[in-house]
Length: 221
Image 1 (tube, rainbow, N blue to C red):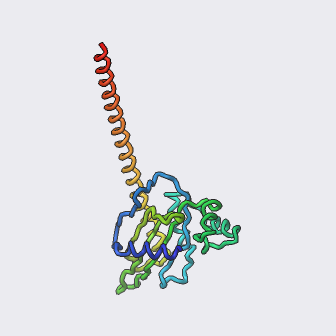
Image 2: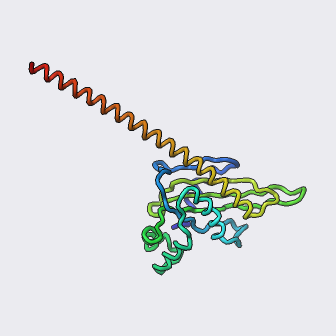
Image 3: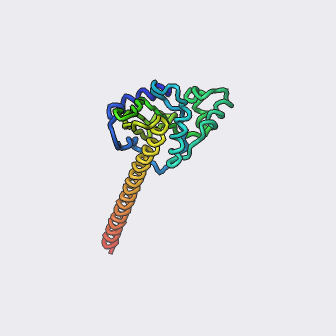
């Protein structure tokens, strides 16, 4: 199920990959002011780095995600599944989802896909490399995506993979944090405007009823 989800989201987003700052894609109706408990699952990695531990890569992103959400440790999530005689790969199965929700206390999943890694070539004649990363926060119980960010960046000639992703994750979550704050402010303004409008409508209705009452009273005189 998770693999199919990754495939579908990837198809929707890969066409929008570019270099530099890209705005976070927010799901309509998502309110970033609502607290959530999340878990960052093992990363999906490009073949060029297939020997890299996906758990280590995900843990780097999880550290940055602490700025935005309450992050459940993956070891704790795995233990909850193990207690139900399930492994991490079965987290999104029919039996796994209730455990994920009720025992592991997970509201949303962060999916990390590093779909491209081309290291830079060192030396005077060397050239920059390239990395492609997609981060998605979604509801595993409904399949709804809360937000996603796709980024393709140049890699410095002398940067290792872990040096690159450590810096990139920090910058990515900086951008997500900025976009979520803007969305929260926008929603707050909309709510305030709606409340003010409702207050004006209520006042107009009170005036209308008062006029009707005065007319009725005059009719009885």
